[in-house]
Image (cartoon, rainbow, N blue to C red; front, side):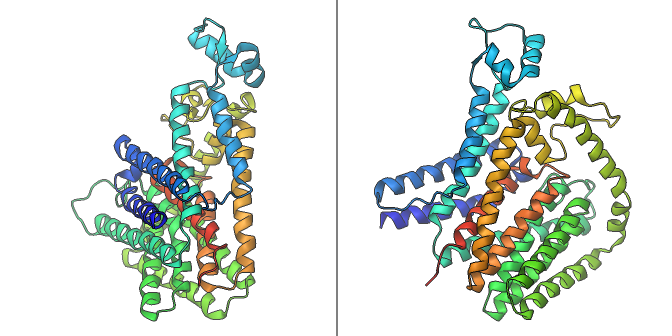
Length: 431
């Protein structure tokens, strides 16, 4: 009884975070971010309480979890006060910078690998909170009704945000600011969030047996997909098209019937029809500027490679990209860049090649494990949901080569939640 109560509480908190996290500019502000972190830690505490109350509870530990543990330990190692000779061994340029700007501030001549520990501590807390969402969802959600509730809340709430954004942008005449969309402060943040959900929504539609439910969620899937294009985010639009292509490819190679393939195409055509309501002219104009935007992002990435060259092993410290990029920026693009428009390269800069190896190896193994078990399953609910979730996660990762989705708390939370749910789903055999 106690185990069920705790499980229900955890599910309720997850649903609250799904609804709350995108409301205030994707939780970029300090207060909503703090609320997400506190609730994430509360969810982890409830899970630990559940283990205490029911010692016989089985804890699921994927083989890849050691890689994430190594990644987190590496970040902790960045914060440790080390003897100068050891800090110089791991980060010679970092030691030089520390001495040049701060001088010798330690009585015992100790140094840290991170160039600014405060930022690294903040980012470490974020990673622990969001990874705990993955871990707890993997160990708590196990009934089909729980999966259906969580996935339906994600999809319906996303559709509401899309509808609000479209009305706000195209039907409220007083609106002046065109850089934001819906409740997000930037259209690219919104598009990345929806790019993660759209394939999942299509997978859920294909998994529905009830015809009314299938039609309803099919329309919601088209609305979410169309909103990515309507938001005028070029990179997200291309990433979504790639996700659709991979979705169709996985369906074709997994022995699905032609009705499911046609279902995806019908949703894609309906999304195209919704885009025509607001017109293609604005989208065409933005894509005409695609080459210029791509050139700027590549130029910034080329500048950032200089940091990787000087801090190859351990990086500059998690969360410290903006503090050092100004020194290496040689392009004429104006502005202060708090984040690089390339999440993956920024992670290499901040945690080094070693940290990036642990992090991306973890993701690779989780994706491989999920995809392998999808091919072994016959349950249409499991197959469609898992394929949709995988394509959404892959689409977000592709989009993050041109943006910084993994620095938007609402998007990061949802990514880890979906990844945990689909990885658990492929192992569960529903009655």
